[in-house]
Image 1 (tube, each protein chain N blue to C red):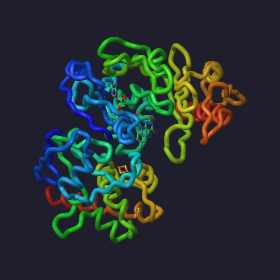
Image 2: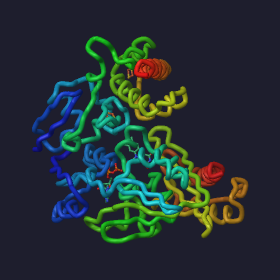
Image 3: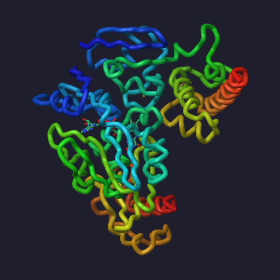
Image 4: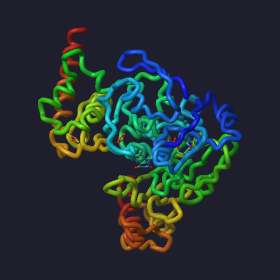
Length: 166
Length: 264
Ligand SMILES: Cc1cc2nc3c(=O)[nH]c(=O)nc-3n(C[C@H](O)[C@H](O)[C@H](O)COP(=O)(O)OP(=O)(O)OC[C@H]3O[C@@H](n4cnc5c(N)ncnc54)[C@H](O)[C@@H]3O)c2cc1C
Ligand code: FES
Ligand code: FES
């Protein structure tokens, strides 16, 4: 057993877990944050994607103890109260989900992708960047649309914030 | 996953001390080891996490000499501007390993220590005539990669980094398995003042190897057209449900052509 302490969605948390506990299980079972899903056994589907120290990672392929001391953001940490994050809003607007199983991972991958591409995104880039996220329902078209739309909205609001600051 | 005891190493010396006398495995990005432990293909008693050792991280480029720490992630290699300016083939290769999430964790040291017969880095290391540096010694890539998942590493030895001289020109191209996305055949070509080297991954039944035929043709002229009509023997190539040895032999030439075209 090891002690694990993390900052999850801005909140300090800790727990004592078996060393083999995966980060995803710590989030779901110890913290009750069941938004992060497990879709495969092979580190391929991306349903479990969360951000660790600002980077998207597969939480099914990392031990909770390995993450100890880090900051984690999960799908539950994106919305501002009742106000959806722009990526969540875009998935809703563009019908970027059907069953919703892949959606938390898709959205965490999308926010990471948008952060890494401040120059903006195009369709080919979004599709290549979604390599690690599998969706069995949508055929990806509306997911790609949603990510592109969100990236535009976020660039605009960033521009506005800059103008205000100036 | 079977029960395991986790240790976080503060330094390379600390890591070797922690591993001593145990059925331990080093943990770097975990992108190979953790999936293997989940399926119980690997079941070490102890994990020694190298992920917090600052000495193992970072990329140095001085003139044409490149040094990459073992703990440097695929994403850090892919996005390093200095490295890109001297060896864009390697940053491109790193940017096409797995997916963005895998690239945020997986490391060059883990990849070469693992020596998966379909991994991308071993081809680059062999074609670039790189030196693999460990806590004990320096090993030429040609001596380091020994076979399927086999390397020259001794019990407890830690890869600390790799170093090579940037080539005049280099390119990498792989044909991806449509499901696993690993290279079904990948070829790294490099031209330096000492000649042309071409290393093949994903195709050899004993892991990464140099293709004499491709090298001979490209030594005459470093152009895709020089590979027209070149035949690579299918003996010692892998055959599985994805491709026969003959199919892979053809892919070696096709990927080599594309790699040379990319090298410019
Ligand atoms: C979905 C997915 C897709 C992938 N696609 C590709 C791909 O297209 N191409 C490709 O090349 N790879 C691919 N990989 C593998 C990936 O590149 C891994 O990062 C890499 O193989 C292992 O690096 P790691 O840092 O994660 O090592 P780990 O998994 O931590 O370790 C791997 C092995 O190396 C040993 N080890 C680690 N570091 C050292 C060290 N410094 N010294 C000595 N031994 C050490 C460990 O004990 C272990 O046995 C993929 C992985 C996944 C999960
Ligand atoms: S559950 Fe993590 S990649 Fe599928
Ligand atoms: S919406 Fe069902 S798996 Fe993607």
